[in-house]
Length: 70
Picture 1 (cartoon, one colour):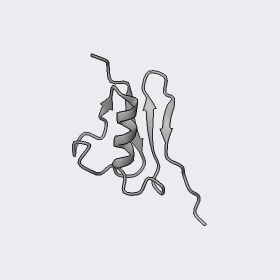
Picture 2 (cartoon, one colour):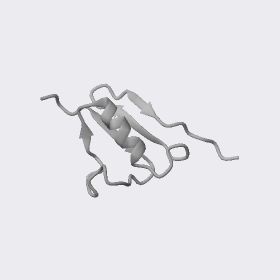
Picture 3 (tube, one colour):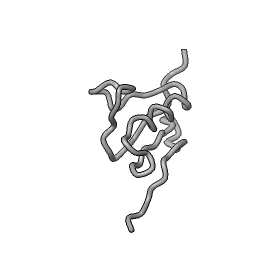
Picture 4 (cartoon, one colour):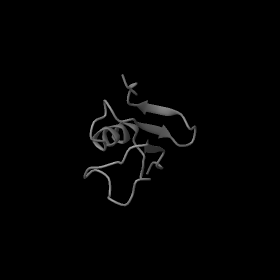
């Protein structure tokens, strides 16, 4: 079994049924699954920043675009 290597991070609250309600530090073994859960765990990924980090390297492997207020 592969070890968990990807973590979801966000400054905004993570919501939804894909994450356990008290486990916002859940880690994933599969990068694609972590990205899918990350996007589904914020209300609006076009306005809220969420990222997936590869734990061993610290590399951000996915990040939603950040928008600047007008």
